[in-house]
Image (spheres, helix red, strand yellow):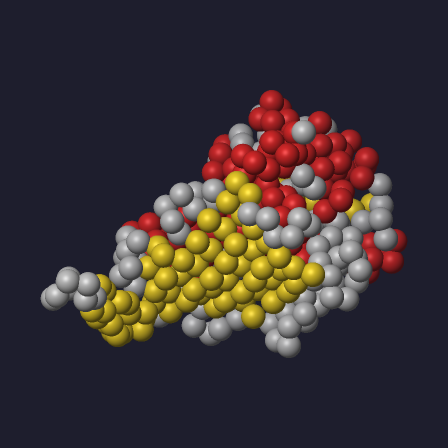
Length: 348
């Protein structure tokens, strides 16, 4: 083994289902990581991917956990297994990157984060969109003040399929939008409400509308659905100075609209005049770097630094609590709840 090989982070990949093959491809193409193991409970799937890698295949997770040369695990398995596998990996001294959401409850996420901190290990959640160049570009626009005061955000994430029999559309799709909002605004909503219905599979909501309220007065609406005639990933951010549209399915993923409306001082008592401004539409230059590759490098950096940054783990944890509140609201006729009210109900 050469000097460069010894410097590489040696990774075991657990789960080769929907998203696992993307991790396999990216780790194998990295100059900073070595894919040492691939692991899956399905023998046929394991055999199929064995031909694509020099990594050792195994259906036994214990082999990965007991291997002293394996530094870290990427866990890309069903949500219901994230906590158990993540905890076992941390207890075995492995750094972990767990696909979203990190765990099945905020309490489980708290336990994993605390365990990683005690063990001096890095823990990250695969919120890939946080590393996406267009998402980063919008955050820079918000942080710079170019958009002015943010009035509201409207997000739509819909498609036809994939129905998940063991989780709702909120658990499946909301982690994307909730993580993006938490990153953009650096603020947790004060209140959450959600309505939806189980149109196809009884007991499994496949459409939901979540409304988030913030202390600043900003509101955000998130539309989620597995039942739509076309795939749409679009978010509009409306500010007092400018507006921006982020469309993940468009060639121009970010467009900045120099448009808005101003309230002029009334010329007579009770008279209000609105002035509408229509300016240029700009498309900023965006990096073509693949988000999942940027995420892998961030994970390796956190391993080298001895732990992930607190902002990333905070977002991963807060995403789950927002999902929990939204699910509770959906199951209770769309009741609007503050996070404090939810915590009281949960503790009762």
